[in-house]
Picture 1 (cartoon, rainbow, N blue to C red):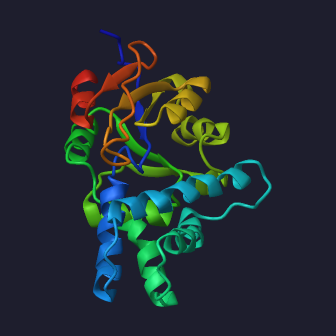
Picture 2 (tube, rainbow, N blue to C red):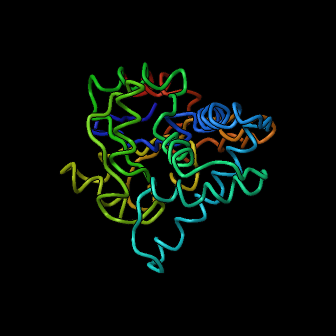
Length: 238
C-alpha cells in the first residue's frame, strides 16, 4: 500500500464529489415549478441546467470574460434551461430563489462521515469552482465540515486552470506533494496531478443520473481509487 504519511491536506471538489447536485436541483425545481402545474422530468432539467454552467466557465478561464461568481453563472444559465423545457411563467423573485437552490444541495450519504474521519489527521479543504459564499452557505445548511474554503473566488478563474491547484499549496503553506486532490472528475484530477498534487478518485456513478455512469479509472492512473469518502478515510489511515 502506498505511503500517504506526507499528506497534510485533502482538497475536495464539491459539485458531484461531495454533494449530489442533480437530486438537489431536481428537488428545488419541483418545489418551485410543481405548484405552477409543471410536470417535468426534474432530473433532466437539472442536467440541462448544469451543462451550460460548465460551458460558461470557459470564457473566464481564457480571459475573454472577467471573473464572475458561480452564483452569477447559475442565474445566467437558468434561463437557458427553462427555455429548453418551455417554462415561461417564473418571475424574477422565483428565478432568484431557484438559482440559489445550488446553495441548498445535500451531500452524498458517505461524504460527511468520511470527511469527519479524515479531519483527525488532515486539513479538509474545499477547492471548488463555487464562490465562497455559495460553498459556505451549503456547508452551514448541510453540516459539511470544511476546515477552510479555497478555489475560484481567490484566484478569479475556474478549474481546471492551473492557478487554482497552485493556490492550494500556497494558501495552506505546504508543498504541492503534501496536498491530495479528491474528485469524481478525471479532468479535475488530471489537472491537479500535472501541478504536482496527489490524487484520489471517488466514484460517483449517478452524478448525472441512471444510464450515464462513467467507468472506473484503470488502477494506477491516480494515487487512490475508491467508491466512497469513508473508504478514502480508511485508505488514509483514519
